[in-house]
Image (cartoon, rainbow, N blue to C red):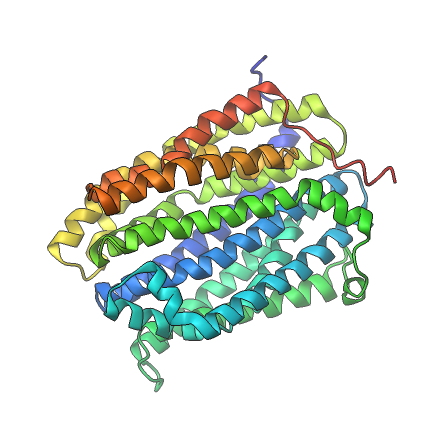
Length: 456
């Protein structure tokens, strides 16, 4: 296979146009998470651990939404590339209705079984009590966050990345202000502690929802989606096409979400010190990989548009280019973890043991980040944009569930390996998927067009 990369100026301009707003949005979201963690860290390790574990259930919901939007974006990007605006609107229709259904399920589960949810992650009574307080507020978040998130994300497939960035900027200031007021009881508000952090998130998500819905359904004229389009159910041929290309993405991301929760369960049962250390490291991980998430989103959209136009060879060349970009930004992300990570520890109220453990785990995360970047661009970007969703579903299930989780659970819970070694085992699927997906890229067997629906 010839490993030439694209030299088209227009390609890099388009990638940069999509990548920059997404990267900035990710940076803002990571900044919010960092400030949340630091504020709760001032209250001690118990609230920090509780919010980290309670958020895993919220994160599971977010990942399922990402599965919905990921599957829909495969179709939307290809339909948009083919100039089929009506099918793009139909894609939005289906994605939003699926999101509402999932939101209702998570709302009911959180409202009725918050204590049982926390018991899954930990057996420490103090952590469970704090986690239940957090979940009692998040019960109101799912529907507004899900619909706003999916709508803003899908707008990127039609070339509008600014909406997500604008919403995130507003959310950033709203969230930080609300957290400061309600966590610590400022400006006459009650001091709510961990519940105040959840309330701050609820207020911020409500602001996101209102702005996104008003823009998508009233202001935007590029796609022209209006509420009347949601009254019509997607046609059977369209649903069949979604199931062919989109459903594997939903299944894959849902299983990844469950897998991420299993990892949190393993870490949660290793003690609150390890949970706190891992929570701090994860914030740094997200902050140092914001650019690669932008590259991944851009690669999925650009590849999907190219495949939708039927330009197979061009898609292959672009795929190779994105792979090289993932290596460059992976090395950059690893270096940033090593430089920035240790400096943030001073902002938390930690025991000497937890602080030392956090420093050790930062080095582990620096290694993890490199392979995380490569597999993210391949699985969430290039191969997904090419329609290779069934292959990716198998890869996610195989390596996470048959390698990482069993190995990490055995090491952390049965053999009581050091925390750093356990974390490596729990993330070993990143390394395996990096090589596996690059091999798939080289094979050229990852391009599937969503054209069967066009021809009906």
